[in-house]
Length: 209
Image (cartoon, rainbow, N blue to C red; front, side, top):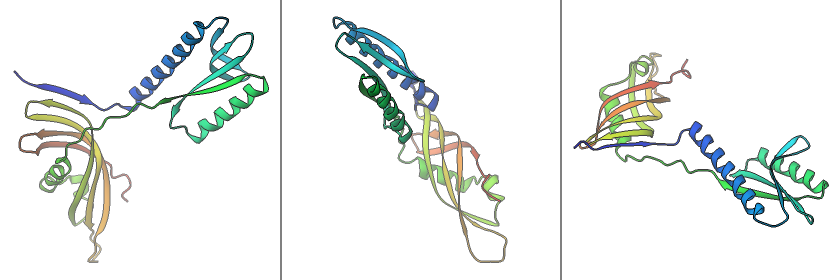
């Protein structure tokens, strides 16, 4: 039976979706907590001037605004919270900030990948880089696996990173220029031999003039 595993790192679109889901879940949690308390009315997306507050709760004794934010809090977010707190205070309302942690983006670590990819590029130098100079020397590769599909002893990985290359241009000068070329693409891995079988990389040379 063929073993088959797919591991995918959370992309930005899904991360934003997940944060929104956590935000909404926290709103519902606060609403449910105060609905169980006698005498409280609970309002979601309460309008305070030109600002929409996440939750507003009120009874005969007090009124409280809840604002939900994601850690770490940016300087812009701090300013927004400060303004909202000032408006709540001016109206005699209590103010609570509820912080939720940003979901951790898992990493996929393949310890031998950078060296294997460097070896592959030395043997199969990309024409986009080779065309830049008379001579090239590939120094190192730094890569990050975005997703990987494993099938027994082989795998297909989607990666992004940078290729550090020393270039000797046709200037008559005996000196090298060190450049880093960003890339993203797909590589085919032999997991048993720890080698790259094939790499299809999109190399960004837009910074090169």
